[in-house]
Image (cartoon, rainbow, N blue to C red):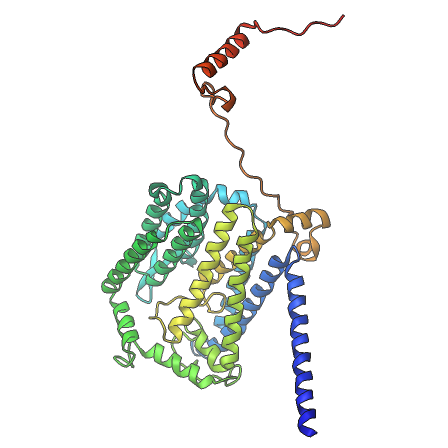
Length: 469
């Protein structure tokens, strides 16, 4: 009898759990069908990532901040200032009209190329073996970060404008690929392997979502691999990184020190971690603990649960970004949204990949989590662009125009987006009017009849209607 009661209780528990899961799934599905679900979901993920990053930068940088400046908050306050600047850029990106972004995309690209060229002059500053910082008085930033946005905006504009001709390779590749190669060359001369890889991701995403044939990507990947090998051979500091990746114990105290210490920090974390602020890796056991290798600090202090939470947040970012691209009708918005989402997720995957030992170290920060000025500001601007595109979904536009801006839009004072209107077809030039199908000659008799009709129309000899009395 006891066994029977236990079995019944288990079955009832399973049924209750199943009903609860079905209820949660139904509620989530109903919420996702709302017109502004993409916009609200993106803002929620954005806020969680920024908050997560602020907490982890404060925890991971406290020791080094105190040893350098005598205060445990110096690096955190600098990161907080960058987040405030990025919030301004994010808000501006949400308000700017989409047509303006597309119309001036070529200006953004030209400015980015000029700034990348200035980095190689005396205005550039060298850090960690690469001259990638541009110093203009008290201001210093990495021009390669906004250059990624410029390449995505301008490349999408060109490909969408020529979408009827993309079946021909010369229209598919020119001028997007030559401009991208020029940008690659300027970045490789710094040299900066990680940023070059991300620029390659932006180019590949543009061509992929524009519908380029698969055989083209094999040639591009082969050329990219060749360029990466060349850059590794030219830059001496990167050879050690690749060697330590292939053989982690070849130089455990030198090039492989960071990667080995990151793995030890992840191993110490276990399932739930040592506790926030209680990790040992930041006590100068792990270089760049608050920057490139902050994921190792997350694993040490928050354990597998913290790492999984961060992976879920980036997974939701990928989902909502692709959802925005799929639900828009403007082809330029679709291409830009998919490309920017691919770039963000790829950068996160590369950073996490080299921290856990699956990829060689490239020095790319973890978006919105690592401490970094230009990277944080640029990533927040990208989220602002995606939020702007989310409000341009057809259902979102209809809801905003009929029901008003809503609480979030009213709080942020966001303008009501305009619906997408396909460009009007150009009329044929005068003198080259195409003959309607009914007037095309289909033989001798048909040709004569159509000529007779045209002659009567030209001479006015056709019978006129009789005037009524």
